Length: 428
Image 1 (cartoon, rainbow, N blue to C red):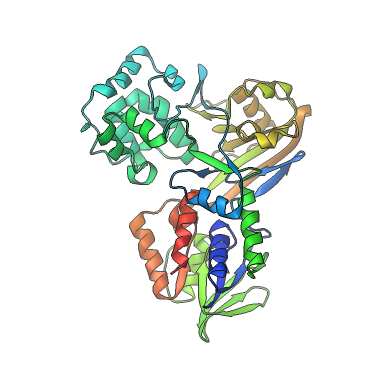
Image 2: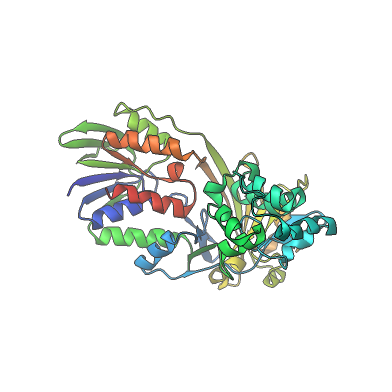
């Protein structure tokens, strides 16, 4: 077994460190920030602690559920139905895949006109070959359900959740089993129902918040003998001795046989450069949100279910989505406060007054300043953009030839399930 330095204490770094430590290696983890977890991070609003970043994981594939089970974490699906906000009304989001319904009985179809709904009904009569050559979510939905269904049902979801047009979303990445199900089930709606499963949720979280996963991983890693330091920024990685010398800005030096880089792409690029490897960092984007805890009695009726996505531009609204966090995850409502999270475009720096106005418009309830018990503005400045699989594999293999393992969201995607699965690479 070997000595290993893990650089980065987000989910990918912490999970890699735990797996290596439990496999018999001696692992030192160093995190530049003041806390572990990266974009899975808690924040206190009023009297409750909630997620300020990622709040749930995709159930598909089962990899995160298995990890939670292993760590002894109880998990739960969200409650309430998300909604889509239009100027003329608010409609439920389809209970399906990426806004594609799995049934003609789905209330989300109420946003369509009779003529548009007739096109959706005709999906059952189309040959399975229609849309079978589609490569993107947009192509498939347009071919089977028509342009209005794509615009009104799917686009608000993909733009609101992924900040992507459905025409830029490869089926292989976002709905990999949908085309196969189309062939076996005969229609797109039936395929969605088959993929989704009856009454099943697409996401879930550990009860108490997604950050409970980070807490449990840290406890498990340290209990196995691993060592963690936060506020410990790595300045250099060089070859030396029997492997590598990892230098920190505070003067600490680690002499190890293996290195796992679980840092953001820009940091990883710099550290690989010290080893003579040129790996350009892909572009990043900024994610902005604002969070409120409020004591507004009318919100107890959960007027927009678990939240709402903005479907069409409205210059009187700055936010593009709202999550009623404490309705979606009822454990957070125990204090009697209502927790709201609003998402903003990266160029918008919303004021407290903006946030109160936007929240009131979305939920259809006037939230007064005196009702606010907690407020926070949250910004993630280095959100990775998706890179294609071939580029990822090339980068990973290039680093591995130099003896360095790479993991993290910038390689495997922002989804928690993708990050968890990517850490399997370190157990080689």
